[in-house]
Length: 423
Ligand SMILES: *Cc1c(COP(=O)(O)O)cnc(C)c1O
Image (cartoon, rainbow, N blue to C red; front, side):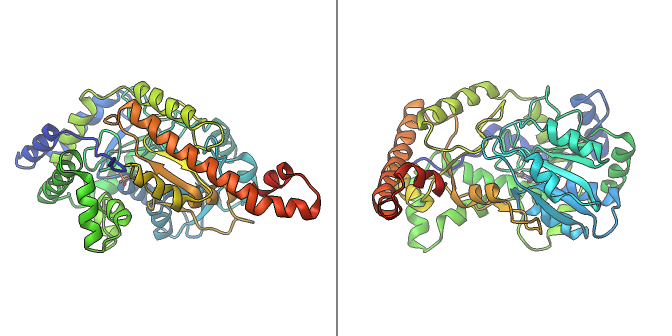
């Protein structure tokens, strides 16, 4: 059985991380050295997580209560939650399913004079071209924040230079993980200095906590790599645990308790060292992932919608496909040995925008996330594509027989027009 996700780290990294937890040295100095190594422009800052960086940024921006903050309508729930904590009002902007970029008409539809910030989220591993949205926001004098948590880190790509802020995550399920940590680029020097001052006042994360995390994920890592994943699944079923939830919860960074206290921490030295190690170490080139992702998309064929596939370059951090019946396709995939998930970590940003964000809502309701990582051979990717394709063509033809034809008989219209009306 192929697990939904593998943690992208080696045992050597974990061991080095643990050693780092017991080495005393100067935090602040090491952070500055690392930041300077990554960018000569002195525009980077390391944080404990993207959420920590985003929270510090909102503190530094000191926006009046009730200010509206536009968000790509689909993201991880914690981001709008942080905005709300700062008394800001998140406003969702609907996306185009093929690119997962905001639609300009949607921006126009929701914007009010109270909007001061735009958060653009690079979903699923693509580096989405946000040119249009950025120019749109610039014309209105908004602060532009780019959430690159899912985009592939590469020293040559520090985010869109036209954005004010770009946030990169090295959290547990992300590419090249350091089991935490984030690199934040802030192009405005005054804003960077303010965010630095906010973070400097936060208590430092305890290295013992980081060590505990390394150990926890070390165990998970071993399980997903060595012990049969199918056995783990059976075990969780015996104990009546919802395994989909288990996988999602285990791979989440923080619990629900004391959320804000947890994110308001400076990174510990061990985390900074691990970030340095992960960022400087060799990694599989993104092109390799992209090429395999494109192959999988091609094999799925034009009738299976893969949200975000049209943006590029794309690392396919995760691989979503839409299905009219996500629960059944998930079951069919599990029977074939592929443990896909419904992606509970994603949420629709709640807000008051008109008739809602139909495309984003559809992706959240209908997308399932296929296992997709380097350890899976091409032959398995092709077999997985076949399962999805066959399943989708079966339900499409079943729908034709059970739903569309009787309606078509009554109205005298063709099945084709019914089908397209259905979409
Ligand atoms: C993972 C993720 C985050 C949070 O990153 P952390 O570093 O864990 O705080 C934020 N936004 C998106 C889109 C993410 O996928």
